[in-house]
Length: 387
Image 1 (tube, rainbow, N blue to C red):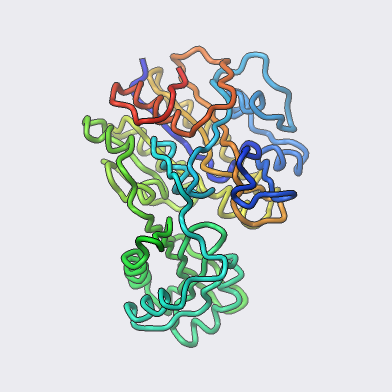
Image 2: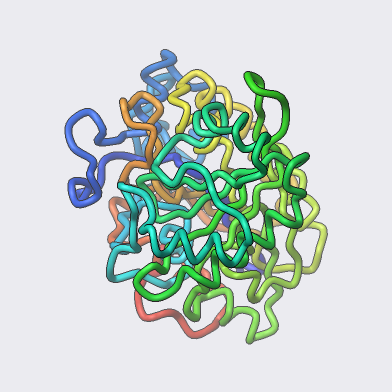
């Protein structure tokens, strides 16, 4: 019998091009196959714990042969949501919520009237207002920002309204306040997935984004976390996860910013009385996928594998751990954007017999359905349990 579930999201670790990738602009060389291509780019991955669960059975990963007897359940999940190829839609679907239409994106920047309203509300003009890499735009506009005090506004291929400010020019709490104002404005037809605070520090030529990023997503519909909380099942959220769900339903939460800190917070949550622990590990995506750094991505995977071994050693016989991803971000692709991919799914418990090939599943919501079955709560409208 399972009494506690850990869900660990390997942000950006896609498992092969999704059938609908072209709907999301992924064509030709931008069609991602993140984990397979990372392994190929570095001549193989040393990830014994992930392989023991069956990751090398689910995917042709250089660095080892498929195992004759993996201890876990393994396969791939296909995303059904049409809202995008981003953190919000991926995590929502894991909890049983699909988004039937795309969130708005702004390849030419935000409309002039919307920006004018935003500037009026915050009492100052903005710089930028175009799609850009977050590190490049602060290099390009950071000096002007420091001279004028004007926030830097930018977007990407995803449905995001991002605001970058130097912490010495605009204090962090003021940046968060500016983001809350943006979130109030961005509704209806302009209801972007996320408003994101992007603080940075340093001097021109050596700017660095700090660890005090904060996300302000659109409010989610009812989801599996709500149903667990309503039944008195305590939930823990680590990293960006509570923000993605508007903080709702979490008895314990910690806003960590790096994979190492997410790992430490997950261990801390395991010492609590929370029976569902939901952690996002975003270094793969943020530090390496977007920056087209395959060796760094590979090293992060090998480090994460060590973290996973420690978590498994700490698990009791009635614990279940599931690992997946929210989208792809192939660092070997010419694109720096997310890629529409399958997500891997691995599941392991000391009390369950593994070696089960789950195949290609039709929705991320199979995770939610499995959680509902474990805890005996009403399932969401979509999803089929793994066992």
